[in-house]
Length: 298
Length: 326
Image 1 (cartoon, rainbow over the protein chains, first blue to last red):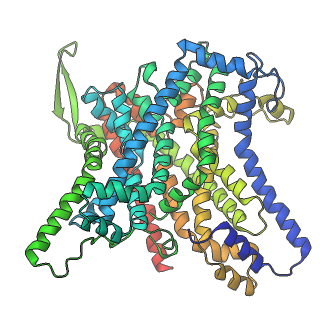
Image 2 (image 1 turned 90 degrees about the horizontal axis):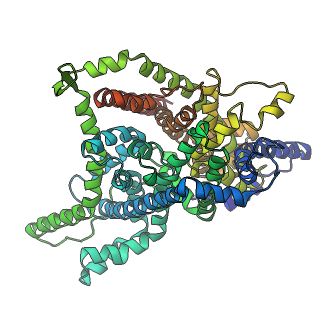
Image 3 (image 1 turned 60 degrees about the horizontal axis):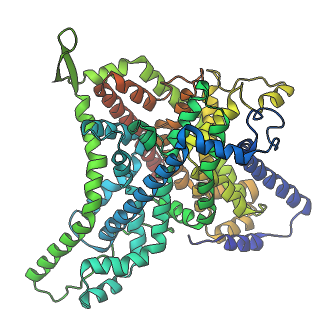
């Protein structure tokens, strides 16, 4: 990014000319009113989810939909975690396992591949890169069904591997890593390391990888969230309740609503499963931006 | 990519990768060095390449292969099965399958309405955030983008309570206003699904457009202002043409996203909402159809991937040509 928000305000101030004060105020009110309306549209459903997660069993549909009544969050959380022998915590652990392992492995593999594509000149390099780029344009769900057919052939469905292995591949991560390696790893440094007799492995792990570190957080974050949020792939691959991630599990609770799963379970469960994501989202926001602006180049 | 976005971190076209200066090296040594470079590079590429080939390329190849075969069951009870070459028969079956073609048309219509609406909204919000009247820029930006980080499946569970007439907390307040619409009736369900996508993705698209707006040099706006071009005219005449690449990009992403529509209708169908059939979207068709045999499902996936590629690349090419003429 070449222009920061502070540049923007400076530019706004510079561009500001002595204009009709009335028109200025009216436009200020109108602009912020539209922005505020959109913020309400975004936040009201989430606020409803939070309020509903605190309502005592049986009071979900009574009282004001957007305000607290019969506050009983602790009991709701307890029943979510104890229902069906505590399967909810297994789902959370599975989601964490798939996302942590998948994102870690794919970040490392992407860093290695991106480094190779950026720092080595070899025949067919652009060809390899173009194939990877093209596969970014084909969305993951298009691969889900063929993957299922293949996994079924190999008798790997309903195993941890069936979700973990596909999660370890991220062409978008390779794309980002190539940009980041080119931007943050100086050739002179690699050369100096080689002259000092460092092997290729040591040059990469000791010098290139630490330099790419901050950028790799972005790659990790995108992959982590895309695995955590994935629904189609695990819902196709997995049957056993003990292997499901939390997304698939909660959707099952929602669909078993008619069979006696009380609505507070999916509602409170949905609320609980969003908390770690919202925290990660707010605390890591600057890394999001980096991935999006780099991604917008393609 | 086009010129206006090249101010961002662009991928190196001719990489600065010639790590070893080989000015004075004799030809033989240089060739050996080149071979060593290629060998090292492939060592770094190999782990990713293996997974990429097995998890992405092989499945597609296998699906294409499967789509040309069919399983013949011989005998009364299907005791003996044999796989025989079927030519294009799976494809003709897929294209004659009313549920499948209807789902493609349904989702195409949904996308034709929803994508322009969502991108128009995203563009409007980006322009407003970029205008000098906006306050709390960072808070608004973060708020709009938040739904992107949340799982679509969980959001769909949430909306499934907010929209189902018997459950929705808003049914009664709305009825006081005289609104008694069932938002998940067959005629309204596509609108509700469009709303769920809009809720989840507007902020993401807005951020891409907003990032492009911020790369416009300040001088451009100043020059336009000196010519008396401000406000909406500035946005329409100057800013929007300059962020065209971002608009094309978000459109392509949205076309792809619409073609792969699955989670939202699948959650609603799973919740047994009568307005949403289990074969609402093309991908739902292929997963439901799996029970009937993988060959037809494979052919349907191939058709779907081809339609998506034609649409997204077609849009890209069309815009490139238009951009070249303009």
